[in-house]
Length: 288
Image (tube, rainbow, N blue to C red; front, side, top):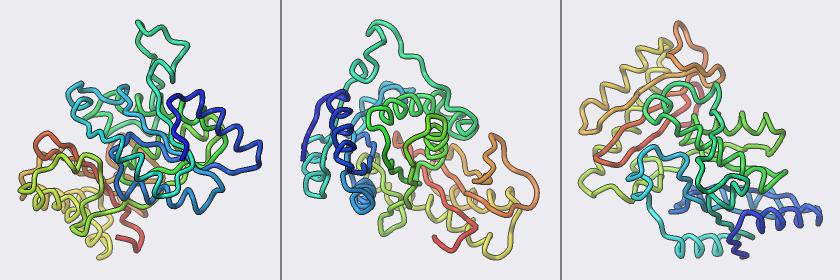
């Protein structure tokens, strides 16, 4: 596996692969890799003839400096996992390398997240999805024409990056199913920060999503009733709820939808101590 230390080197590698008529699968990450990331890499390998991964903890998407500092880091383990799982190239970089045209003394102008960044995450992490769109724009331009793989756990983020890809004309964004622990907890790099005694309560997030799913399967289509089904479960835990919300996944809105829904996404964000957890579930399909 090739390990490159700059976006410029990665851009040349990707261009060289295309000159050889290779198709590229790209998995952007912030490191602290887990089975969820590896499932994205596995699909990228199966659907392309070359695959690459980025590891960059993007300070532009952290509104809290302490949260940035606390984010898990284990580069040696990450590199070993990627090499063992068939990654062809991994690259890193610095803000200065990703934005060479910006004076290091000046702040980097953020690209607005756009329509899909409105509501939910915007309210509780203002500027976060702007920072995501800004760095992903650069990552996409480093890798170029490709297929880019994202996990559905970060549902609102997948809407923002898909919108970005449509705006610039590439890559093809592939959204992959959330990978979970046996308990149902969505895999996340932040899970490593949880304490053992918190394990029971954090699974209430998944249980709340399943409760909304059950109501849907029984014929409930009112978004407020579905929201209350989740809230009832979450409020019986020590989680601090940021939001338990219902949205129409095909017609995103900052505020809750009204009336009878024909499709629905249940979304939850909550904190257990200092650890923020998010998850979501499509209600109008047969997949839990």
